[in-house]
Length: 165
Image (cartoon, rainbow, N blue to C red):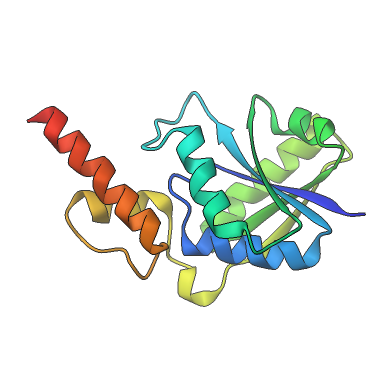
């Protein structure tokens, strides 16, 4: 059985992420979508909230699990008894960044393999930072995220604006 981990921040989960999850669920017997806790990144949503948003949209895939992890990804892979990382690639700059990460992970654990999946064209420009920025400025992102994710984003920014007023 081939098991892979699709790690990420997913702050928030986008249609691009969901596309990679769907395609990864076809490639692997088990796909673990794992929300990383990165102390160097400030996130809008808590780990619990991000996991809930992902779970809401992967129920149809019986071989997809949602989890979270702290620390080194290579250690988490060992815990999950796999050596495969799934990553989505949107652009050439993504490839350069992901290539460096893949080589670093392999240097840390020589058994680790990273599988790159090209994103679908309609999602090639999407990233969570851009989506958060659009919503923070009052724009709509309904073509980039599921409706409930857009609603949560708007609620989150409304709370932040109330707090800062």
